[in-house]
Length: 260
Image (cartoon, rainbow, N blue to C red; front, side):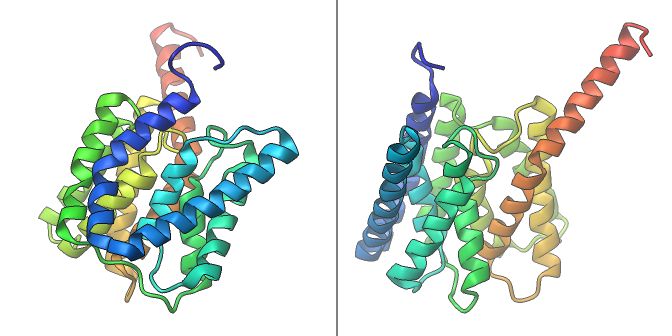
């Protein structure tokens, strides 16, 4: 879209506005280390966006700030500058820029970066969040839904399935904070989440289902590690979920009009 108010960058700005409360509380409680991590992520992403802009005339996007924030919040702690920069670079290039930039990618670049860091450097601890940071995900989700930047069905489906798992005692309460943050920062991304209505419900339900599966069967995994792995697999399955939704819609149309 090249004309009108609503274009790619408008959506990216709405997404950043939604992340505002979460970013504010994370920086407030994270202190200087949080600012350094976010600054490094922004710098690395700015360099790669500049390289691709010069090489392929590919315009940078404000969505890179959202990617930087997600990586800075969720990445394992104590990685150091080189490891963190390597993971961010891999996620930005292989998860987004080679596909033509934000809006054309299949998997969230932050999900790719975090998965790379988790599998590549398993000896580093995943973060644990203060309660105000976790609770700030709620206004972030509400703002995202109100502005249309986040699909409501994905969020609601994930919460319902997760609540059912918690109510039956299957999902431990300790997994909820990390799962909620990853849901808002990664899974509810407007580009990599499902595009159809039914697909979005399945998208959120699949994410929560994978959270329950990993929480009960992945011994020794940290909550953020579980949530990131669930987000990665959910993103890879999202095109299939949309295909299922479209196939069911076509079948319904054929039955309604008496076509074989």
